[in-house]
Length: 121
Image 1 (cartoon, rainbow, N blue to C red):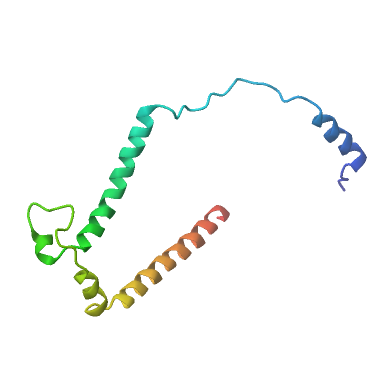
Image 2 (image 1 turned 90 degrees about the vertical axis):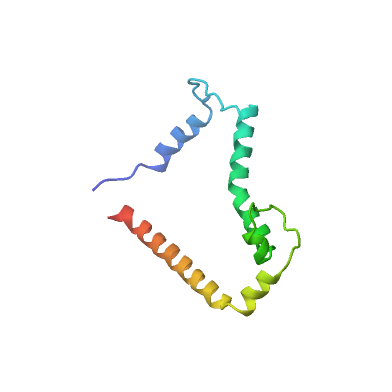
């Protein structure tokens, strides 16, 4: 039978290590983030990621004729909410949305379940 160490034996070692200074090793250098090119690249990446969403929202405010116009315009000349009216009156949007929610939740739950089991296999 293995006996655990007595608390009297462990405590002095733990207390003694509190007073020791930390060992100094090789100094670590932080990655500099004040370079202008770093912020330029990050800003460019942000623009690339956001532009499609802005285009989608602006296009939803255009009428059918303006959507088909070539070359396309960024800003709608006559903003309209007719597309949103069609979405909620002519299409079965709540059913489509519920299907998307069910699919997203089930994929997330299954992914979490399988990822939880993988380290235990």
